[in-house]
Image 1 (cartoon, rainbow, N blue to C red):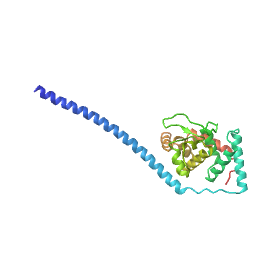
Image 2 (image 1 turned 90 degrees about the horizontal axis):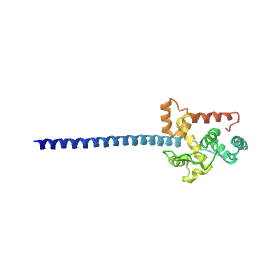
Image 3 (image 1 turned 135 degrees about the vertical axis):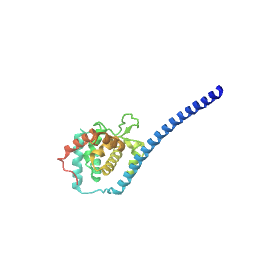
Image 4 (image 1 turned 90 degrees about the vertical axis):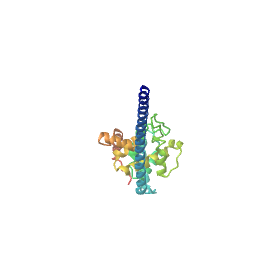
Length: 232
């Protein structure tokens, strides 16, 4: 009789242990599935945004008008002077022209590069270690972000290209244009550039606004150049 009771208790205890670990396994798997679902939703939103951007974006066209290039050179000179020569004139002319072609304020892009590089404009800059990896180049793109932006821009991608200042600026301009098309305001666009789109949404939910120190710093500095005639 006692052996029978002991056997039953052993079976019950074993079953309870198995059930306990199985439940823990299910909880762990559910957490994994929830995380995977969150990532898939974020990727889906990104793909939808990319698709919309590709449909809506306007083809850029170069112009040979001498007044246009005189204005571009004036913008470039302002950037070079502000950077005390750290931002090269050839870079500045390229940035001013490309940003203008996308109807972006060149000084927003310039100030973003200034913030991203800590005022150095170092095209070979490698950012600090993070759980997501490092950021590279003048525009500080990570290797998990840059490839799909390059694809969206119709550009080739290799890791080493992130250190090319012209390539880096082109990615930044296309990405900013994409983000501005997506959100239709600079607070969200710039904060998303800095934190990622999901990070921006989380920041906005926590703070009630997407206006971040990062975005505020760039926009406030860019406003200093309002007195300069912008290219239309």
